[in-house]
Image (cartoon, rainbow, N blue to C red; front, side, top):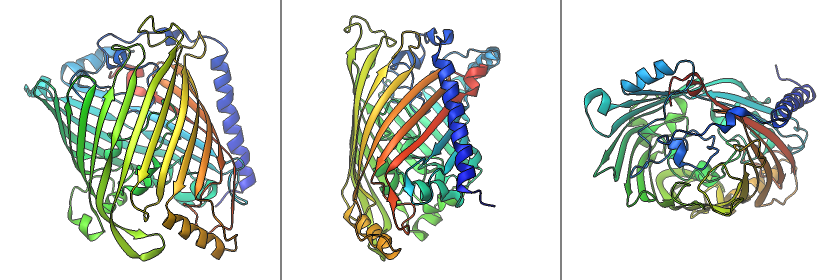
Length: 489
């Protein structure tokens, strides 16, 4: 039975007020646990702190290797068990995300105050084959996603997006229809003094390419040109993929990958490893490439990260202006930059916990007018350690410019007019955002975010008469159960 918008909106606002109350209590005093420094051999020591909540980013790049093979030491009540597992070559991670969102005043007319919520458990188990079988610099990675407590705000799995018409919010939320998915099974091997990193198996390129440098906020840090145009399944799903990276120096590398595009993968729980569905359902493959230069606080007081590249796929897709006309292939260019531009100590130290300011930009440009989004540009800034008593917090602001392709705009405009709306449609949406990264405890992070959306599109609900600009609020709570318990590092 569908809840009324009013009662659901009341519950939504109560949830938001509760989250803000927790935030206020946390901010009212220093957190002693936040002063703990990472181990010098831990990958955390090489990364700008506080660590990003994104679980793929926490697998920080080690010297001469794109991905870390040496997890940190377990700390917690079960640290002895975690150490014993690591001695056997097994490292366990269990990140948990809880995301909540509400289109308070934005979106489809009469559908404000809709709530979307979901919780993800992402157990990751790495097997070090050197310790287990003597296969040097070789690792097997497995990952599962378990999706629970899903509330879509009415209207089925697409309910929140249909009401909110908000691109950057909740793109993964609407797609998690399965209760669980087997997300990754891959073998990763380093060669030539760890300069060459080769990985093959069931993977998803979204975990390796063009994730953006938003610094904070899993809820709104999305690459929508890649999300909507590339034909890749949601990151919860995997297909066959091969990836290779060559590390010229500890800071400069090139990376490329080829992944199967199989729309059928979205309808499975990840255990169908066959390839027979791809061609039958309009699939193909996607090739991705990038060159990246990344420094950290070990090497410089003012780190710089640059990632440039693009992708091209061979899958068929319908032209928005003519659903019966299929076009083969899409492509896009991507550029992401993140730079530390100011430090309170003037660069006198390499301390990552000194108050400092980062600026970042994300640029994506599609090469095909039959795709969904033509251009995405995000520009933001993040102030680390905004309060002396909270060195792991981050406060930030961001503006995102999002332009539809001419074909997608024409389709949405015609759909709106056919539904009785105005015969005009904005091709550009602009998102003004404030965000906060609050470290409640080591490995527990709360990230509230507020967006004002100007001229939202109707991508998820093309048949509405109109949508209005307004506010969308949300937060993400992230914790790592295994690290809190000491089962993994």
